[in-house]
Image 1 (cartoon, rainbow, N blue to C red):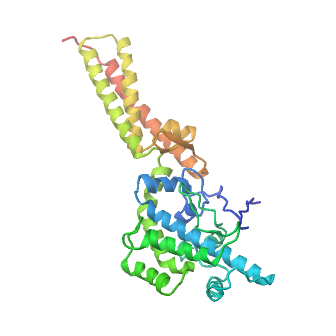
Image 2 (cartoon, rainbow, N blue to C red):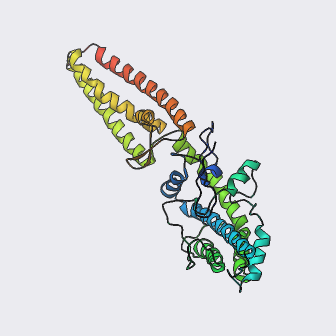
Length: 343
């Protein structure tokens, strides 16, 4: 039986799918149905630090938040009508009824407009207004009482998205086709619209761009490896220095005709060198993977909790360890057992 926690809006919170026997989709990550290292927090850090495109993700999340705000407003509007106190916004009652008519049961998606399955539509309907917890604060410029969404909050939310992401020269401007930006600007500023459908085309465009350009790299980094590029470069440098030191010491000991017991010390630099170079090659630290750790910022690690990713990384870790031991053993045997000759 599925245990769902309920947020302030009364909407069930998303629950990660622990029985998924595949890599997650982008929509599953955005709707918080995955666990580290392929969760929304990890994807946010990836978009910020690696892809350098976090503004696109923030735009998508803000539009999803705007939709949840509208859903909450419609729910309260219906409740106020039922109890005979339609005081939420008398001045904007005409526009409110238009939102109510346009949103209906809020069946249009918060993710891409077209889903592959009906299940994804149902999952989207369960995304609460607080579902997108990211390193940035997601707030509204609301002076309304707690748990009450006023009409001006909806308008302020739509304008905030427009002025933050879409207008030329905006603080965090994202690059979209001119026709999309113009349509959204006209709808909000000229026609006074602020329902979620205003952003549908822009949101779908951003979703498809992330799905095509960023998400495959994210899965490659997090589901097939557990290291980030910064530490990979460090490991490559350490590995090359260790291998250089190992070869330098090996040839010196051979040409000094040192005993094999002394040459056994070559195991240390060769082991470190091969291990770090293998980690660089496969973007994977096998020991950390077997322990169940994945790096999200330099030298900061989180537990691998996604079951399928944990199994996948464990298999790759065993393979990397086997390759490391094979190459290390070959080098050590070669330089320890080769006959010495003093020059």
